[in-house]
Image (cartoon, rainbow, N blue to C red):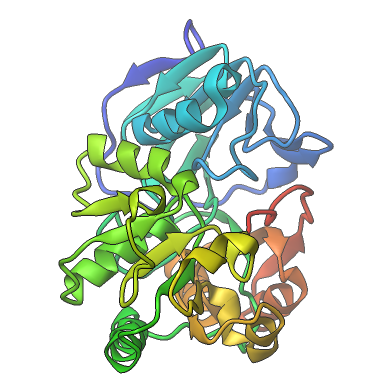
Length: 356
């Protein structure tokens, strides 16, 4: 956001709680048919229709859409958008480093890490003594491919709720990797075909396998390569990655990462008795695994599970919670039980990515 409305100023000290004023947040932060609009800053956060000024929390297609005129995001998110959207990423692109403050109209804006995927950020807005934080998508687990989530104390916390039901308690990464390594040892004659989303999940899965001791090649569907290449250029070493199209055998005993839609598809017939796996938080629901024909469900998500959502709401100390998308009914009730004011925004267009 170039010009007078995008003036960078010094980075803030550690976030401190700002007392809430009597004025309601609805007077300056309003959901409408294009998304969440910050009125005194004249920008939208993750709009689902083209706008003049947009702040984008991360590069997934349900948050980073084409056609906006001026776009502000982390440098990594902008790089991802260029790969995925080309010229549609925006007419004018401006990067903002984590913690760097920017004056936009009457609002001071800065970004804090969200821990979702590479480049993901929460949007922090300070206006007339109030602080509002829009989380975007986030998780609280360690991830070698991105900066971890930062708790930012605030008066209003605008959160996602993708897995906001008590049934969603994700297993530890070590537990899920042990399942995969055990399966590889038990079925050396089969190709382990893992469905995973191409941005974030694929790269995190590779790093988890490296940390678990898998040093050999990981084979990729061609759709996975451009973003893996970008991660490498941005300093994330993913090790030996190879394209399935370059394989000279049926890849028995090997790991293949591919789009979830290819599991059980004709594309899978090239492998040695493929063992279908799927890395997603939705694999907590066994019926979903059965519906997809998944033999090895891996409960690995880039979203906060129920305990992490509740813990985050407690940690930020906000008196008011807005919920952008997901299972908002359960989280609204939980917030009210915690003595907090809660509101479901029910913004359209989110949660459309496959393989969360």
